[in-house]
Every structure is written in structure tokens, then in C-alpha cells.
Length: 575
Ligand SMILES: *[C@@H]1O[C@H](CO)[C@@H](O)[C@H](O)[C@H]1NC(C)=O
Ligand SMILES: *[C@@H]1O[C@H](CO)[C@@H](O)[C@H](O)[C@H]1NC(C)=O
Ligand SMILES: *[C@@H]1O[C@H](CO)[C@@H](O)[C@H](O)[C@H]1NC(C)=O
Ligand SMILES: *[C@@H]1O[C@H](CO)[C@@H](O)[C@H](O)[C@H]1NC(C)=O
Ligand SMILES: *[C@@H]1O[C@H](CO)[C@@H](O)[C@H](O)[C@H]1NC(C)=O
Ligand SMILES: *[C@@H]1O[C@H](CO)[C@@H](O)[C@H](O)[C@H]1NC(C)=O
Ligand SMILES: *[C@@H]1O[C@H](CO)[C@@H](O)[C@H](O)[C@H]1NC(C)=O
Ligand SMILES: *[C@@H]1O[C@H](CO)[C@@H](O)[C@H](O)[C@H]1NC(C)=O
Ligand SMILES: *[C@@H]1O[C@H](CO)[C@@H](O)[C@H](O)[C@H]1NC(C)=O
Ligand SMILES: *[C@@H]1O[C@H](CO)[C@@H](O)[C@H](O)[C@H]1NC(C)=O
Image 1 (cartoon, rainbow, N blue to C red):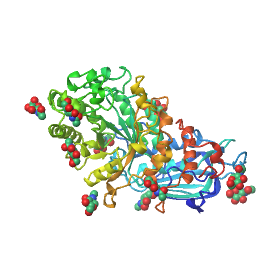
Image 2 (image 1 turned 60 degrees about the horizontal axis):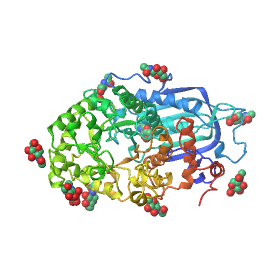
Image 3 (image 1 turned 30 degrees about the vertical axis):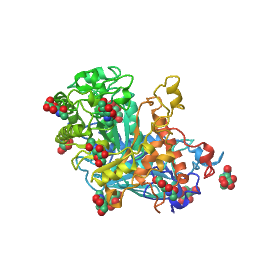
Image 4 (image 1 turned 90 degrees about the horizontal axis):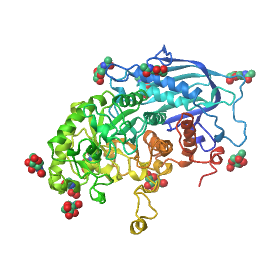
């Protein structure tokens, strides 16, 4: 066996596991997988597909269901969603193993050495032991050990990445024996998807969850509503979606939400729902105009909001409190079977909008701040009463200086200083600096500029966070940058962000993948390598290229990061 790190530069394709495991050794013997491979889970034979989609009365997904789903996905990906790795071998070389004298993997033993907690599929960050070990012997004995069902699913996921499709049929690994021991650096490895500015059919959302799972990313943050549309159906307030969605059928029904949540839970991806407030709420106006102030001021919307249409929930209104009470009483019981968290938003609140709010008539922070504290306290008390932990955007802590409960997780997005300040306040932090991890940047402006002064001033129409952050930039982001050693334990991890001003189902996949994979490796493996240095693009790019091929084979239209010339023979595209 050879240690991966030492050989990576010399093998054009070597054990392209993404994200890179903590410890990984492999050999050069070939093994094939038998289509009838026998899989045992704690010594019991697993018949594929069983109880995959049977769920408990109260919705919570069980560890046995997670393992059953992982087994099905393992077999599907190895036998039907695999690829021939010609791009990773010299031009016209005969790289495929001979078909004679095959040694087969005929059994896989899954050993979970600890019992899942009842809430394993909707855990708080860090509550589940996600580690696993994977051993493949030269003669084809496979053992995966983990403390949790999620760990077992990660072991199987890694196992799939050892295999390639053979052009004459079947699947093989050229890497036996294999010995892997692996665990994540950060417990919260997520993606935030805005399904309000553009609407996505449910299968697009599920495909993102699949792709997250392939990358061992475990949180899907559903930015469910915003000023432009309200697609989330709230049965207790039926007009919200029928009037506030772009079209009354471009919505997510309770059954759709449950489908998304269950799909995630079965794949180890916890779905976290956000209702962003009090800003980013003007779509409520379409059904409840009395609750919204400064709605769609034109043309100088810029005085009242970061984006059109302006509008925000009134800040000192009992009607707004009653509305939120009804809204959250409807929604939170549908969230709690699948998540430990609920995100109450809180970004980009515009002060001037409250000049027009008859319940306040002021834009002074001294007047507004106590009202904002009451607003957030009310929401968070209700969130806690439903057994959930609140998440807020950084502004609530760092701009509004609110006193937040110790439990509240703060999602930062503007800077590394915001992470350090959050941690210094004693709060847990999520990272996702927009200069690195915003997937929407670099498309150019979506605003239109009138000919003349406006058009000249904004030429060449770059957006606020351009240029596009390529995977190398995403990969260079260290979540712990600027965080003092005594605060790093408070950095739970982070999320990449897919805001949807200029993304819809047509370009979703290629805007997210494989760039989100780069962030996924930072979150799983850490930004630094074993010797404490920044991870090398030179060793990462062939692995990421191969991960891209796997994503494509699995139905995710991830874009290429290099041409085959670069991946066919080592490091000839390095500088
Ligand atoms: C359960 O999953 C199987 C495929 O795994 C599918 O054929 C069946 O329709 C599903 N049943 C339900 C009730 O969703
Ligand atoms: C339902 O959920 C509760 C709390 O999460 C849990 O204690 C209980 O075991 C669950 N019921 C079933 C049948 O799984
Ligand atoms: C692969 O790269 C090596 C080192 O640069 C070179 O010697 C060799 O000729 C290349 N092989 C092919 C097939 O391009
Ligand atoms: C077949 O493979 C086995 C195991 O790899 C090896 O020991 C044996 O020598 C091979 N036999 C032939 C005829 O190649
Ligand atoms: C359980 O499995 C994990 C992951 O492989 C391993 O780290 C741990 O040592 C095992 N625990 C026991 C008691 O065997
Ligand atoms: C908030 O509303 C209450 C009741 O209408 C009113 O008494 C109070 O003055 C308002 N607060 C501010 C800051 O306007
Ligand atoms: C607050 O409102 C006043 C009156 O409209 C305005 O002149 C001032 O610029 C506003 N302050 C801020 C910080 O926007
Ligand atoms: C919050 O604190 C900062 C720094 O002390 C200050 O600049 C800001 O005005 C405060 N915000 C509010 C709403 O009080
Ligand atoms: C390592 O990456 C950081 C960004 O995370 C960067 O500031 C630093 O310059 C890099 N160091 C080296 C030696 O490239
Ligand atoms: C870390 O140490 C500094 C200096 O002693 C202290 O001010 C800060 O509160 C500590 N941070 C945490 C999160 O404990």
C-alpha cells in the first residue's frame, strides 16, 4: 500500500475521492463488484429498497432508513450511473483492466458500533458522530465501520468513488487494497438555495440535495420566501402563496415541503427552512397589504430596500405579531420532525422604510432597536417553543446589537471580521463570505440602466460581487481565517449561497456544481492540508475533475473545470 499524498503527483488518476479523507492508503490491484453483492448491516442481510420510503407516523426518518437508502444509492451509482475514466489516462492508452481472471467483491459488511439517537436525522450541528472507516482487502472483503447510520452512508459514498465503469460492462476499482479512516472537520456543511426570486420545480431541489449528499455536505438551507415572491404554502394563511407566488401554481405545498425534507433526511441532508424577516418580505403585501410598509416605492426604491420591490413588515404592529404567530404555528410543527433549526432571517433591514411605517414613523436606530429586539424575541420564543434552535443573519447581532439567546446561531456573510466578532460575542457562527462563497456573483447586473448618465456610470454593468468566484477562489477560503484559537470551536462550518436573481432551473446545476464541491472539501477536510499548508490546486483539480464526471453520470449537469488535455497526463497545466 502507498500513502495517497506521496503518489498523487505521479498518477494521472489516483483514488480521486472527493472530499479527501483524513487518512487514505490504496494499492494497485483490480477488483470487480458482483452485481449480486451481499450487503450485511450489523450481520443482517439487507434486501435492497426495503423500508426506504416508509416513514414514521410523526415523520422522523430512522437510521435503518438512512442505511437502506445509502445501499440503494450505492448500487445505483456503481452499476447504472458510473463513467469510463478516459479523461484521466494518456491519450489512446489501454488503461482498462483485463476481463480475464476477475476477482470479485461479493460481500460488504456494514458495522455500526453505536445506536443512533432518535434525532440523528435532524441533529444539532456536531451531535452526530459522522466518522467512518472503510477497508477493502486485496481479495475483495469490504468492511465499513461507523458509530452512526450517517457515518455508514458516508462510508458507502466513499466506496462508490473507488469504482469505474468498464467499456465491456461491469464496474471495477484499480485501487485495492484500500484503507480509509475519515471524519469531517466542520459539522455544518451546507448550501443555501433561494427558491423565491426564481421558482424551481421540486425535482430541481431534490437534485441539489442528491449532489450535496454525494459531496458529504449535510445541510440544505431553503431560503423559502423573499420580497419578489412567496412560494411557500401556509394552509392557515392560504392567500399568502396564492397571491404572493409569481403564479398561483408556482408554489411548494405542504406535501412538497415534506417530500424535500424526507428526501434530504434519508440522504443525511438536514433541510433548514428560512422565513427571512422583517426585511425581504414585501411579497406578503399581495395578500396582506396592511402588514407591509414602503411597498414597491418607484422609481427611488433604493432609498427603501437593497432590491426592488421595497417593503418590509411593520415593526410595531400587533397585527404583524398576530400574523407571525399564525404563520409560525402552522409552519414550525412541519419543520421540527426534520430539523433542529429554524432560520428567522434578519439581513439587510432598511431603516428608511420605517419612516413610512405609521406604527413607528422613524428611521432612528435608538427608536427602532428596542422594537427590533421585541420582534426577534417574539419570533425566537415561538421557535424555541416548537423545539427548534433559531438561526439569524449576522446583522441582527452585529448591526442591530440585539441580545440574542445563547442558543442562537449567527450566519455571517459579509466578512471574516464578522465571523471573528460573532465568535467573540460567544455565539456559534456559520461562514460564507460573499467574496468567496456566493455562487451568484459575476453574471453582470440584472438592473437596467437608462441610456445616458446611468448607462455610462455603470458600464460595463458588473454586479456588486463580481467577478464570478471560480472554484479556486472558493477552495482558498478558510472558515477559520482571523478566528482566534479559543474561538474556533464556535465556527460550526458554513454554507455556499445560490441567490436566484439570474439563476433558474436552466442554469442551476452549472452555477452550483462543481464549485460547491470545492467548498464541500474545505468544510469536510479543512482548508489546510496535513502539514498545515493551504491545500494544493494541483492535487485537487484532477480529483475535482473526476468528481465532476461522477456528478454528470449521476444526472447533475456540473460544468467542466479543465479540458481533457490537462487531466490526461498528470500536471501539465500547472503553473
Ligand atoms: C417507494 O419507493 C419505491 C422505489 O424505491 C417506489 O417504487 C414506490 O412508489 C415508493 N412508494 C411510496 C409510497 O412512495
Ligand atoms: C416521534 O418523534 C419523537 C420526538 O422526535 C420521538 O421521540 C418518537 O420516538 C417518534 N416516534 C416514532 C414512532 O418514531
Ligand atoms: C506525459 O507527461 C510526461 C511528463 O511531462 C511526458 O514525459 C510524457 O510523454 C507524457 N505522455 C503523454 C502520453 O502525453
Ligand atoms: C488470477 O488472479 C489471482 C488473484 O489476483 C492470482 O493469484 C492468479 O495468479 C491469477 N491467475 C491467472 C491465471 O492469472
Ligand atoms: C466505531 O466506529 C468508529 C468509526 O469507524 C471508530 O472511530 C470507533 O473507534 C468505533 N468504536 C468502537 C467502540 O469500536
Ligand atoms: C408602538 O406602538 C405603541 C402602541 O400603538 C405606541 O404606544 C408606541 O408609542 C409605539 N412605539 C413607537 C416607538 O412608535
Ligand atoms: C432618516 O430619515 C431622514 C428623513 O427622511 C433622512 O433625511 C435621513 O437621511 C435618514 N437617515 C438615514 C440614515 O438614512
Ligand atoms: C450597534 O453597535 C455599533 C458599534 O458599537 C454602532 O455603530 C451601531 O450604531 C449600533 N447599532 C444600533 C442599532 O444601536
Ligand atoms: C493561504 O491561503 C490564504 C487564504 O485563505 C492566503 O491569504 C494565503 O496567502 C495563502 N498562503 C500561501 C502560502 O499561499
Ligand atoms: C478568547 O480570549 C480573548 C482574550 O483572552 C477573550 O477576550 C475572548 O473572549 C475569548 N474568546 C472566547 C470565545 O472565549
